[in-house]
Length: 211
Image (cartoon, rainbow, N blue to C red; front, side, top):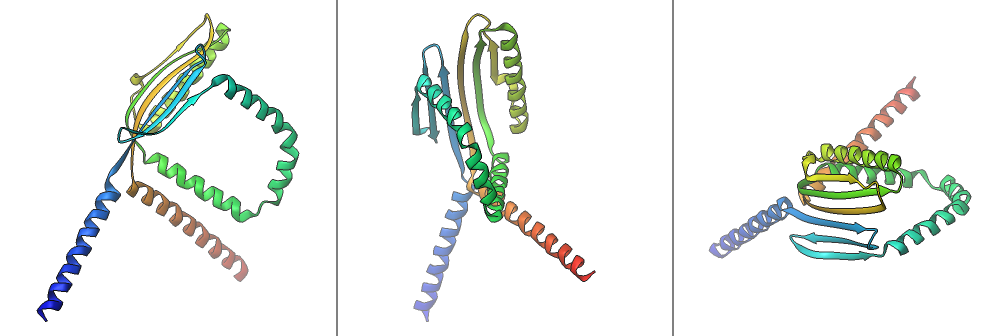
């Protein structure tokens, strides 16, 4: 009898330990650092992603090769427009609904991201003073909107025009955090929203049929 009681107590303690450990892992914030550097004068670029300060992804960019690839893709896009439109017409509606569900999940997760640090330094030039002024103004408005969305100060960002040369110099560093609990809550909210909409559609269809 005592042996059975000790076994039950040990099992209960193990469940409690695993439960506390699981709650700790779920609530532990994931610190993600992102560094983006672009300099068209030197024709270099770099993308670096770190988790808890440890680099997990480092990519050096060749801007000339990237520009040529983009231009080639734009040339091929015009030839494939007709085929893509025909394929879109054949796409089942269920896949479209699933894509909307995934997009909703991503938007909800992004809204729950907390910005710990954000530093931006950019210099833009198009070779034309008027176009440069408009471009810099548009980027400043876009950056202010992003700062308002994440609730961060705009003082950490500096976007300046370069009226003399045609260049893009972009240097950004940011630290973001997100918990597994945030992802679970966002996905659960999206699922509940889909179920509510589906229930409302079934009720409205039942009312129409009854009438």
